[in-house]
Amino acid sequence: MSREFDVKKHTEGIIEFIRNYFRENQLRGAVLGISGGKDSGVVAGLLSLALGPENVVGITMPCHSNPTDKSDAHLVAEKFGFEMLNLDLTSTFDSFVAEASKIADCSNPLSNANINLKPRLRMATNYYIAALLSEVRGGTWIVAGTSNKCELYVGYFTKGGDSTYDIGILNDLTVEEVIAVGAYIGVPDPVLYKAPNDGLSAKTDEDKLGVKYSEIAKVINGQEGEGQERIEQLHRNAQHKFHTPYYKKCD
Image 1 (cartoon, rainbow, N blue to C red):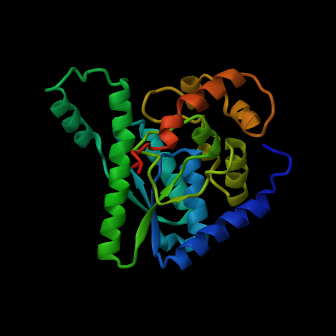
Image 2 (cartoon, rainbow, N blue to C red; image 1 turned 90 degrees about the vertical axis):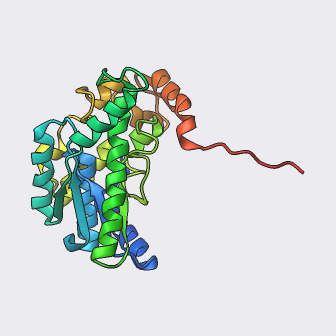
Image 3 (cartoon, helix red, strand yellow; image 1 turned 135 degrees about the vertical axis):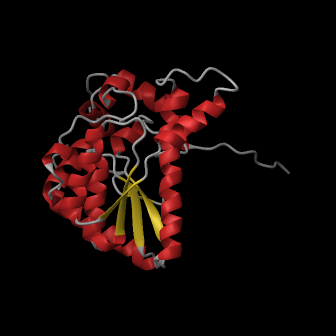
């Protein structure tokens, strides 16, 4: 974490940013997936403090998931007082894969196709619930993102999945800064200090990336660090995730 990071200042700044955006756009509430990890826990806490817990709905979406993820998610809801919904996507996932198996062999649960399907189903669920709440409760509900600056820098997200949202809360915070904010607002320790993992592949984020988040933060901050070449390679290789090309007419 950079020395100049003022956790009180930035926590209050994020809360004010959320309030201003909702006020300016006449929005009512926010929906987000609660994974049981620190990023979604911190975002849920900040949204609850900014909007009031009555205007925040968290969703657990198990899909061949570790049962502790759901119980950890409920620790966050109990702490901040927002409503939790549970939509089990296991059968939806299985039905999709069964249909796709008519085209090709989909039996490998750790294939990129299967791993990335899960966050895409979850984001579709977030948007469905946001639209449903807008209809049945009134006002406009939007989807909040939970990606942090380190993940975004190396492209550790799924296009059409966790890269899709209406408001980003942690996009300019490194992992260490996210933890600092989480500790400041009281995110439960089992959630805040859990080893980061995608809940999909049975590996930690750092195992999959081959570098530590602390080293990614150093590179982002212009410092030399272990794994710098690997980090920059990941950043370069992820450029297709940041920009969608389109044809431009030439007169």
